[in-house]
Length: 429
Image (cartoon, rainbow, N blue to C red; front, side, top):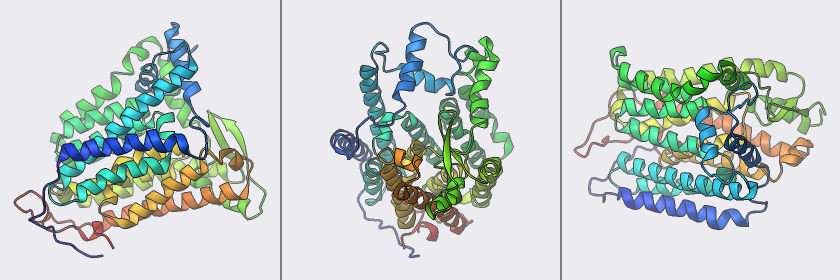
């Protein structure tokens, strides 16, 4: 790897121009590219599910009760109600797409603004601002057909808060993420690690607890069992057909073993093949080990991470990749989560730019156009999913290696607040 010097005379990027440019390019992708892809805008969408929940609530039904069980956390259900038009599924879908398009553009703006705060000299911030809409184009229309881009927005804001050392605010954002998708809980230890000694954890923990618990409390009072269903539903889910842990079975099927099929369970298609039960049982332990490995290297470099905020994006990306790679469920929309962190990391690291970019593109190639062919165990979609999962595993390993290669010492800081040299691990090859 090459260590490059920063140019002290390089012009400062404009945060507002970068944010507006990233938002505009994102909207251009949504408005021009998405309607002209090789599949329909709403092929294989969860919009009927969201509309169904919103319609029942509009009719007076109370969610999170034994008679109206919901698998989504409360903030997700609140988001489903925002588009209105519960009397018309088609109108609801249009307004939901508009809402998600606006959130997608807003996520690009936050990502670009964060990039300008990380690199106040030179053009790297503009590179990140452009990479975000590139990522949106690579993953496709699923961005506006699922609500996961709202999770990506919270992750983008979370990274911004970390870079500014707003640790209580960062924890509050994660609490909202927990009430939206549960999985952002895995990022909370990063806040505590950066905050310093345990005596400094009080306010971040209070902020997280308040944001995480408040959306649940009204429903807990009415029906504890209805709220517990949210957690029980995900704990009981079997190995999903596209998961990385199911890749050996898919590869065997591709090579002619003829041992794999699928079943419908918990709102998705699960893999039926020898060994999938063991893989599902192991997924929790493997995910904990993968996340713990990231935190081990981050803890060793905690002093550097506090003074070199540009390196924080690699930690966030590594944590998200760990959750996706070793979880027993890997839905295509999960790749939306990594877009902000990937844009910031890819602006510095060509290997992770390529690995994650290809994983996004292969996910788009398979879903939704070839998904039914995958269920038929046809060779071409099987090969795409096997290749995508292999790339995802490689991306996690690469992100862990990059984190491992970061120096443990604090960088020398220039007058403008930037490290005098980029870390070896983050430089381009």
